[in-house]
Amino acid sequence: MSVTLRVGGLSRTELSAELRSRGILLNAHAETLLAAPEFDGVAEPEVVSIVERSVGDLGFAEGAPLSRILAAAEAQGLALCSPTTAPYLRLAMDEQQSAPDSVLRSGRAPTGSLTVATRALRDDVDYPRGFYLRVVDGQSWLRGYACDDEHIWSPADRFAFRLLAESTQ
Figure (cartoon, rainbow, N blue to C red):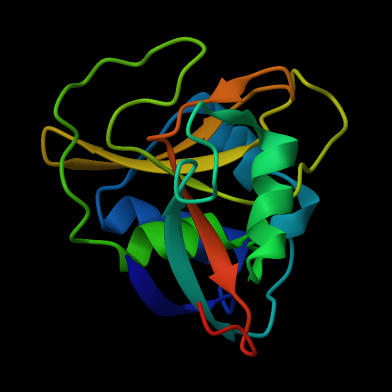
């Protein structure tokens, strides 16, 4: 997956209304993240290119913790997305395939999910770490998740990164 999208330009209220109007569901962690100060005000829209990579694509056949995944992505010319990217990506990805099941697995990324690679908004492991996108039974979700750096992501887990303009990836 590779997509170019506009991130920013909507207030928190406008962004929430747009998500609702498209029938996108949120979990409690996503609502917590959307209430963060990073979503205050209206940022000038920025056009960004987003690419998808699996943990295995980044060189981790046995999986890896998030810190190593993000370092490997950076070494390959990929960057973290801004904290506000995930809701705009959810709005842009109306063709995401439905997950093969509706199971939410504690301690593992759900099947069919796409985790948006961002910096943590807080140093608190109990505060949601970031967002992932998933479609279950035809219903689009923007979900927040929590994890620490002890968590080993599976080689099949997929992340969205920002493609740097000078990168040839």
